[in-house]
Length: 68
Image (tube, rainbow, N blue to C red):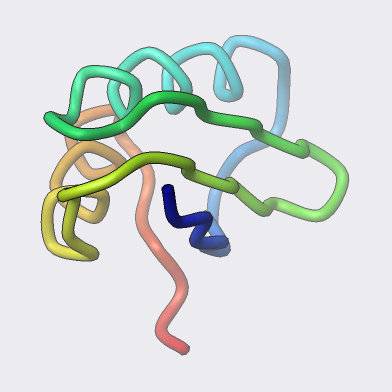
């Protein structure tokens, strides 16, 4: 199982956190999602998911991944 951490821009409240968690959790291969509002970081655990899939899920939630 792999862990990857992403920075999400635009999250300001618990609703934002829940939206991002829900969308990213729906990505195939994702087993766990931890969202830290204070840092804007999302840690995704699982196998077989791609950065593009996570980016699309975050976009669907109404936010964006910061460019690394």
